[in-house]
Image (cartoon, rainbow over all chains, first blue to last red; front, side, top):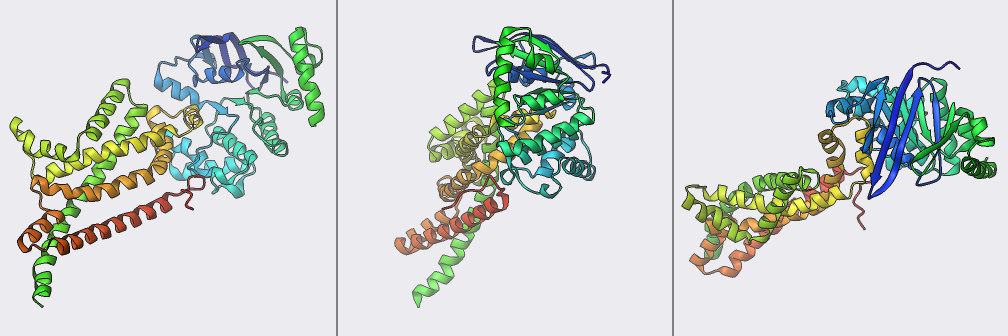
Length: 254
Length: 224
């Protein structure tokens, strides 16, 4: 696959929380159509890293570029503009609980993009249909299964026409039976060429999609490389140890 | 017979005119009180630090001073510094600010109960702070605050009876005048009390309707 221009570039992100260094200078870049998967033990800083990319967590240090344009997070308007272009998927979905599936997808289009209601509705319906939820559009989050909720949240992010998607363990809060439906939606995104940065421990899934696997520990990137190499023959012994463990686990699961 | 004539000729017209005054006191006080409650509660959670302090101070003072004392200050005290309110205006201001102080605490509690993920998701979509608050956080929080605020509105209906202490002769005031003239304290105040009971029942019916109307799966009030 030929890769295009760099979509997202993050340099030297540092973050301290409660006197403890969570991120110690993390740098990464993602090119158009590329899918990078972040793995690492819990507490490695993966979630904090994803959240500092779109400044949901304000990094103490570090810079971010979208399509080679530097982002200044203190400029509120520019920040809101930037966040619209970076779709984010959370582990626990974070659907707006008081809104139907349809309204969850519409609300950003109406309130943030200023789209007309009927236009937004059409777009939201399209996105929900694409994730296979045509028949659930009027249901509230409390009436949906975990897998359906996550698919709504993907539709909500896609409706904003993001240039890159950040996915923070999109299936780790799901029953094993529901993981598949979310994976197939993400796989569909990959086929359509969506640029993604994803934290996941679904290693088979990662192996089949990722252009690169990035191993993080203690707020640092220890090693990165193509999935085959990372998962079977990593250079760093710590990476090897971690990968062999999750390989073992996925062997049981799949 | 004499009693019935007194009842229909004197008592009812007087009490009905008093009731009308009471309603004119209660409705604006509910509206302003709820608005104050929402504003003060929201600022105490999401406001600029200075506004947080301002809203805390407001709540402390207006929950701390007895309502009657507040009414005396609005009506009898402020003219000393050249600020004059009509009896009705003084009563509405007093009720609204006091009710708002109580309601703000329900709003604050409800805001704190909204999961942080809701905020993160809105920000991630590009919502500004204000838009997040208006489109995502408040619609959820106000649903949660409604039972508590409704309770406060019920109180407000009853403490509107203090208005006659600042010469705004509403239902209780009319009752007092009738009772002192006829010395039929028990009868008159039983009727007055029953009218408040009707008002409160209507209000709680309306509040229940509103809860049902606003109820959304996942936000229903779980009634036993």
